[in-house]
Length: 93
Image (cartoon, rainbow, N blue to C red; front, top):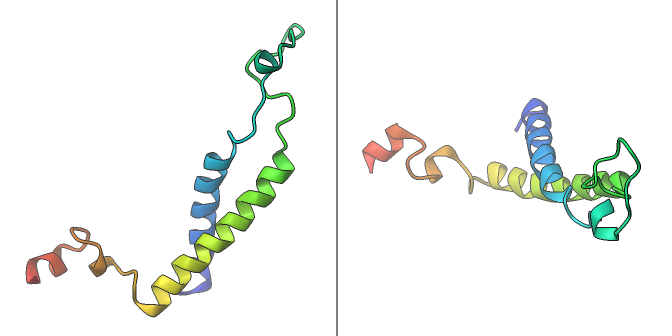
């Protein structure tokens, strides 16, 4: 894998993991029973802990990227190994 492929894979995996991690541990004003002041959405999080979530996202992404990299370099994960994605390989079988 080239460095460009690794960077692109990291970016894609990072964003997917971020959107999966964002809802964890969210406590809203409504959940806490706090009446929000004017201009604040009752469903907005009290303490979003974005720093912790960004660190967790990066760690999870590095683990998943490592698995993806090993699968690519060792030949376990190729287009031809996924049925239906490579029409030329599918027709030969």
